[in-house]
Image 1 (tube, rainbow, N blue to C red):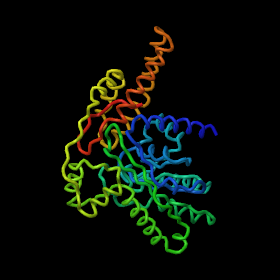
Image 2 (image 1 turned 90 degrees about the vertical axis):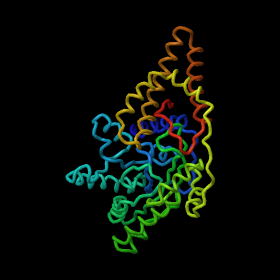
Image 3 (image 1 turned 120 degrees about the horizontal axis):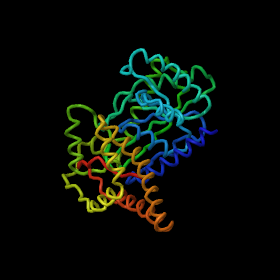
Image 4 (image 1 turned 180 degrees about the vertical axis):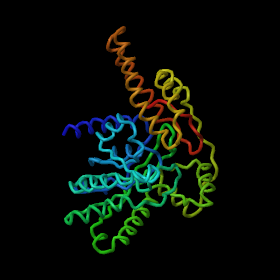
Length: 358
């Protein structure tokens, strides 16, 4: 019970933060999510640990997560992640001897599904900002069919989830979370051999993911197609429209990026958040994977800006009264909200490591 209350509080705080961090969050297909029963969300993975944040805050299921084991190295971080229903999954790159630990994790997943709860997995096995669905690993199928074999009366629904960003790793974020059609797995498991069942489930999930997010086949034409879409300043969150362009090889003409007339407002926000901004700039130098920029920028600034804005509001209230402190806090949040919601999100221009989020 305590863990659920803790999770709900953190979930609400993160949802609040993502609202201030994102220009627009579009959610499609939420009606496809069963209200009860075992569910496995199979999600593509373009943008580090911020991906599960967008997915879990756009559905009302009590989600458990499988994330790469490297995130659990720090003992303090490990306890925090475990308190939020995150579990490590080990890969060959973590060391062959570590793979044996996955069996215990799979057992936990089986129990979660048996209790009619939900599990979130990234079946591509790693993150990559490329706009392409990569071959899926069979790990998620092992969890599904292992649970079905152990519990004969269990039905597990697999929901493919496509997440697409206008700019992976850029601020402000613009994202669409697209929940696909439910795939029931009991019939697949009982009517086929295990090997065939695995292939059927992987193929069904992969096929849906390629329509739920922007998918450019990763071959010699990938860069050419992506450049044409970027040059046309398309909105990548219009997934169906963009995939139709790719399929028909019909691309709009080149357009100039929109000018950001709110840049002075941005500099005012930076000035007001100078300590969190400088701390972020230092931390950003240690990030060696672009897919983790959003994860660290959002996480650090969510807590740092919240803390420093409240601290600065408290100092003002001591000298000028509570009304002034409250006004400052409200005005600071409003500045961020105006910039995030109104600043342009062009398709190609790189925006510096930023910045402020709330």
